[in-house]
Image 1 (cartoon, rainbow, N blue to C red):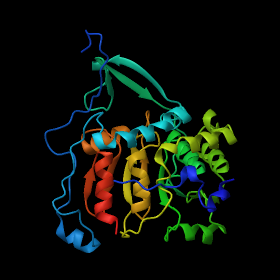
Image 2: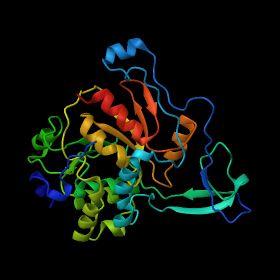
Image 3: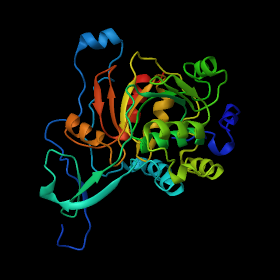
Image 4: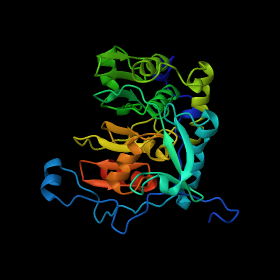
Length: 333
C-alpha cells in the first residue's frame, strides 16, 4: 500500500551525497520542426510585472536555443539513470491511449503541422482519447515514490493535464495539506475538481481515471499488481532517490507550467523541480500521439520537451539541464 511511504525511504531510494540521407544506408531521424533564426525562448522584460510578483530571472540570464537529440556531456550519467525506466517499464507512458503511427510521404503532412521526419518520410500519428476533464486533475505526490510513478504514467497515457502538488519528505506546503484533506499523509492523493472525487491508493486512482477519462481498460504494465510496483521502483534506481526530500526554496504565487511526459527527459528536471520549487506544477502531458504536440509547436515554433513556462518571471525555455539550473538559481535558498 502507498501508506508505507510515510516511513523513511529504504536505502535504494534514499538520496546519496554527490560531489560535485535517404539513399544511403544510414537511418536519420529529425523533427520536421525547424529551429528558427529568432530565439524560441524568451525572458519577459516587463519590469512592472516582475516587481508585482517579486520574482525575476537570474542576472544576465539568457534561455538556451533548443538542441535536437543532444545531451550535455556533464549530464550523460543523469540521462542514463533516467533511461532505466524505459527498460523496466517497457516504455509505459510514452504513447497516448489508442496510439497508431505510419510513415507517409513528406507532402502528405503540411509543413505547419508537427511531425517527426524519418529517412525522408514523415510519421503520421493518431490516438483515441476519452472524455476531456474541464478542469485539470489535482495530484499530490513526489518524484521518487513508485506508487506515484504509476499514476504519472496513466496521466501520460490518458493525455491529461494535471496540477501536481509536490510532497517530498519534510515539504512544508502540500504534504501537511493532504493529511488535513484526507486524514493521513499517504501518497499519491488525487482530487478531481470536476466530480468532487478524492482518493488515495495508486491502483484505485488508475482505475478511476481510465474509467472516467479513458476507455475503461487499464494498460497491461499498470495491471500487474505487485510486479507493477516493483518495476516502477526499479525504474527509479538510477535517480538515486532524488526528489524525495525538500530543499528550502522561495514560494512564488503562480504554478510553473511544464510541457513533458513521464518517459521523457523530464525525469532529469522534474525531481529537482519538485525539490526546489515549493509550488504547484501545471503539467501539460504530450506523449507520442498527443494533440498537444501541435499546440506546443505552434506556441514555440518548435516541438521539444521538456519546455518550461514560468509565469512568475516570464521565462520560456527548452533544455532540461538548463531548466534545472534556472530553477536552482531562481528559487533555491
